[in-house]
Amino acid sequence: MTTNNDKLRTKRTKHIDLTRMRKAFSVKPIALGVASVMLSACGSEREDATIYTSLEDCKQDFPDAVERCEAAYQTALDEAMRTSPRFNSEYDCEYEFGPNQCQYVNNNSGSFFMPFMAGYMVSSLLSPNRYYSQPLYTSYSYNSPFRSRWITADGYVFDGDIRKRNYRVNKDVYKPKPTVNRTMKRGGFGSSVRAKSSWGSSSRKGGWGG
Image (cartoon, rainbow, N blue to C red):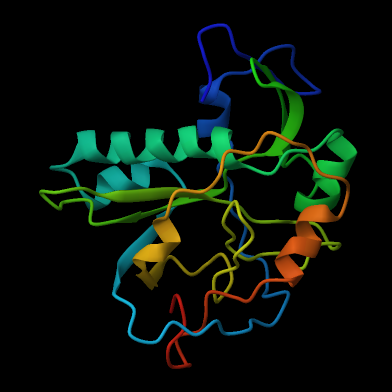
């Protein structure tokens, strides 16, 4: 989470703030790039979840819950800053996520490159108890095992390509993720993705998300 003294800047501009992240949502309908592997979750509780690529999309779906949409969006942005994979160089980050998909961050936790948040997943937005929100990423890099797929900060890939926006997910997908304090080398995030299973497929029983 950033402070008032935190500075965000890209290679092409001197400074950047969260507004730049908000404008960074641009999801392209690219074909499916990698087959999914199912991770079984038999007997787990599931609920509906929607992926949004902008705050405005959420407001259109919930015109009477604008404040909740804004809160869910901000929660995802804050989580992205706290849990996103970090890299020492723009080249290393773009190797994983694609050209122009990374930003430079310089704050109280150090300086690094991280991918822009490509979307955010929301569940139970109108619940009287609590809603769930988390950032998601995608890649436009041919080097990536999750090219054109939705992926969480800790490396779990959702079934289908980035045109898919509605899922049935286990609540475990929203469990708090550890704060990231270290940078990783080029290809390190992709390697961790290959080591994990997909969240599942709607055509398979017991998957994490379908």
